[in-house]
Every structure is written in structure tokens, then in C-alpha cells.
Image (cartoon, rainbow, N blue to C red; front, side, top):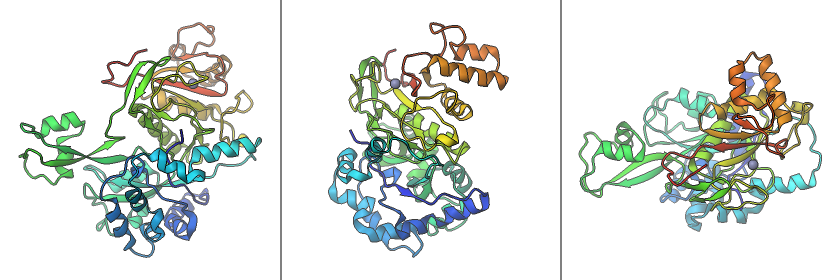
Length: 433
Ligand SMILES: [Zn+2]
């Protein structure tokens, strides 16, 4: 299975000083215009294509010289809306498979096989074009923080859409170029049924009444049967379901982890998970990238097959809740783009712990598998950080032995990667541990 295709533009590495960093963001569209952009399926369009994309693609082509939209419009066949609209392909996997060398997983898989010893050095920053649909409550400063770019840059990329600073209208699509992975929301439609009311619909769709009102320009609360309501949701419309146990289970409507900035898929892994797993991963890596904008890149290994079930050589990874992540390594071992045997010499304890902590703090982690020797390194690191003994005991088996009760367990082979298992998603009643 190939990971979904997403345009990948390698922007030049931003200089370290913040001032120059900001300038670099303003230049991102130029880099796209100058041929920096290889392609441009925005994050919001990674799923199934929506209707009306063709028109949007054209509309964008009319825009001003420096607008990144124009660059894409000119390229025509590379415009995500147009291209997808024409092809009418609903399976992103298929469309991407054709493009071959642009599939990050594939590309890196090939690289990994040839280049046995990557040259040390900082990672190349990937910048992705996102399509952010404004929702009620969004502000420029919030978006700037979430996407890790200056508010001014967002304004500049969307000059016509943001007429007055700070005023964003719900439903408006913004272009944002970011090197932080973000779980993008897509527009979905709900058709009102007889007897429906706003609060019941809002509850069923897991949005607020205010969200529905703003997205649909509703003044009052009267609805007509068969009326169409727009709303935004993270992930695909067809909800996933995790069925059975991780070692004897399956996955319904498995969601493919999209390519994105800040992470790489290593060597052709199976990257399907529950909607919740994918959301947690993107948001978790996003938090890590906001904290450490210069990385390193997170290596994402196998999740599950699209339908779950046996995934050799793993015992688990069957129900969309398991994921392998690379450890974080010191700068002189960078870039690390596939799983690397990890030890006291090469591990970056601060960043490894930081990434783990981000996931643990979500409260959605069921179990973590980490080699006992690496548990010791993390344990000693946290003792030095004055973390309470009672907390350490809940977290680690070390020093109580490999059979001890703890969230983080020793399982053979986990010196290459951390294995995270998420809890059963709420509502997945057939999911088991
Ligand atoms: Zn694993």
C-alpha cells in the first residue's frame, strides 16, 4: 500500500534568527512560483475529492502575481482541484500510485535501501500547502500559532480573502504553507431530516450549534426537511471502526496517514489506522514540531493494513490502534529517515521523552513497548529531572524487572522503535484489548 500522495515542496532551510525565519515564510510562495513546488495536493484535499474543486482551481488562477494560488493555477494539471476533478478518482491511493516518485514512502524506501549511511546534518524542512477552512472562533493569531507561521504571512497568502486584519469569515478557505503537521478539517454535508433540530444535529455531528449557524449563515433555528447543512470534521466522512484485539482483530474504513511535514514513513509501511489514531499522530507530531521546529523528523513505521488483520512480522498491529515510531537521535546522527538501533550513545533523551510525553498526556495511550535498556536511559534521565518516584513507577518497569506492571513494557525488538498502542476509540463497541 502506498501512502497518500501530497505535494512536497522542499523550501530552503530558514535561517536560525527569528527575524530571518519570518522573512523566509513570506518568501515561501516565491519558492513555489520559482518551481520549488513539485505538486500541490493540499492537506485538505488528501481524502476523497469534493465536488466543485474544478471551479476553485480556475478561480485561483485569476489571482495576483505573488499569490501561490496562481502558480498552481498556471501549472494546470498540477492543480489539485482540477487534476482530481478530471480524473474523478476517489481512491487517493490509486492516484498517488501513478505518480510514483512523488509518494514519500516509496521515495524514501528507495533512498533508504541505496544509501546505507546517510550523511550527518540537519533535516531538510518540508513545507506543505494546507487548505484551512475558517470556522467560528478562528483568529489570525491562533492560526499563526497552530501552523507555526507568522500571522503576516497568512495574510499575505490570502490577501483577497482577508480584507481586514483579524477578520475571518467562517467557511472561507485559506492557503497556509506550513512545516508543522496539522489535522485538517474537511467540509461535509448533512441533509436535514423531518423532525430534526439544530441541537440534536450538532450533537450527532460532534460540533456546536454556533458552528452550524456560522457555517450555514443561519440567523434563526428553523430548518426545512432535506435542507443541506455544511459542517467541518477532522478526517473522512466514513468513520473507521477498530474491531477485536490488536493481536486478533481488523479495521473497518481504515484511514491512511497522509504524508505531511515533520515526519517520514521510512520503508513502505502499512499506514492505516482508526481516525483517532491518525488524528493523535498528526496532532502529536505537530506539537513536537512546534516545540522543536528544527526537528528531527519523526520516523513513522507500520500502523495497520487498510482492512487490518495479520501484518507480518508483527503479532499485533491488526486493529488500527498500534503504531511504531522511531526514537529521537542526537544531531550528529541526523538525518535519521528509517528505524535505527538505539542506545545510550545515539539517543536524544530530551526529545525522545518529549515526544512520548506528548502522546502520554493525551490520556489515550493504552500501552508503550520500549526495550528495557532504553527504559533505563529514560528512567535515569527523568530521575535527574526530579520526576516523582511514584510517577516513574507507573511509567516504567525498570528497575523492577521485565515482568513488572507498568504502562511502558519491555517487548523484544523495541530498541529500533517505540511501539504505541492507543485506547479503543469511544463508540467502537466491538474493539477489545
Ligand atoms: Zn510495533
